[in-house]
Length: 331
Image (cartoon, rainbow, N blue to C red; front, side, top):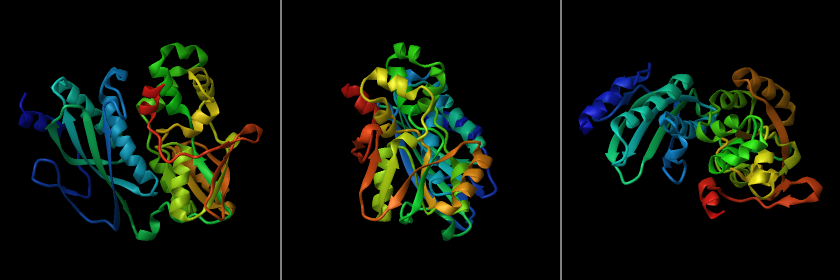
């Protein structure tokens, strides 16, 4: 079908919201202002952030692209609002596959209360999705940035880490499935991450002083949080909650499994700092909001060093960023 017919079929899948006055179909979407807003732009590219061949249906690609963008809003502790999506369509992607991608975004938008308010479709030599998301809060004070951590705050993390890195290793080498009882759970962590919007909002309300989503890995993203806050961080690697089977899979894939769990990106959990006296309240709030654990894994220090302690007195040198597919390609 032609571009305009495809766009029309895409619009038929999009919904509306109380802030959306004019949605997709005009030259621009129009929304009602509501307090203050946070805006984030993210993009995923085939062969860099995902591989089409890893998906039986491409709705998972749409979910992953939107989830990665919404995770930035989760780290701000705000309510999800609108999303705008541009899809680059290569010649070997047919119309039904394109609509599958949209269906994946529609499903996640319904789960998270996000309105798909508009976007564009363009021809491209490679499949990509560029996603802009807008979050809302009643006041500027409701946002949590990366810059508020204070010495003696507790360093906490939601959920479990290492699942996405292990899932990628399983996709690259299916023989590793023998190392774990539930390989499908690890693959899903890589293919269809879940943005922790409810947990982020709960942490904000409980008094989190700084927060970041773990897209580049704990060791790397801790550096970003420490730099923005002007503080040092001490992380106890043995205290970090890990996805069941992740160490075993990553050990078998080569290297130190624990280290790869701490360095591996795309878990999209939240790393936050919070006054120690408020930790119990925050843990209960996160569990009530999203049914996941909140774990204390270290503390905020004076200075500017980020220290990751490993068993046996070893130290992990933090990295500033992580590209899992690029690392896999070098192995």
